[in-house]
Length: 251
Image 1 (cartoon, helix red, strand yellow):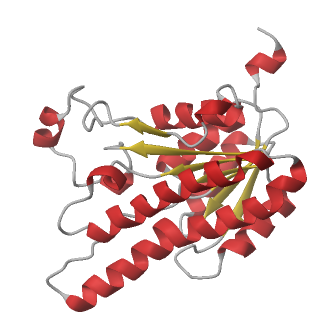
Image 2: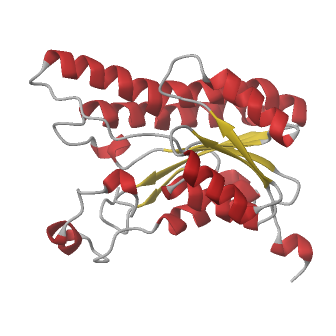
């Protein structure tokens, strides 16, 4: 195996949002292993972010921003550019499963606002930054982490989450169609149950018994898929949504 084959992302500069734990941390490890320089975005989990950066050492940089606050994406993009000397790959992973119960109009409104801001608008704002910058680089890659909820909807308490993820899915397709002629590739990855803190308390023996593989998807499986997409080894997958649910949800 050549050095290029062992490190297919050498020279790439990747921003991973929500990179301090769970799926994000697994993605950071995978793309860094494959040779990329990585800006690890975090907000509240400073301990986890610093531990991950220390683990990886060279080519790992920390950037902090609260993407739940409107208008913060542009500052995060600028910080990542400064840390990496530019960004040519964006992984929008940051998100949260925020309730929006219909029985309470105030909680409903707050839930919709919070879900749309964190799970859609912040990612869209970062995509806008990428769409402005990537043509100057001759192209770039965007991977948006959506959810099976984008296809099937979510449960009664999380309607806004499913809607936000559905919007992110549509955004990804539009970017692939509208900006492919500028060398910009865009992919959506739609996990089901993943063994992270986001699903903590929701996965029990009954849930596992209903899963075809009888196990929850490890975050490393999602990360390996993302690393493959970023590598450019299948450029004509641009615009595709790749489900990773262990056949729990099959379209």
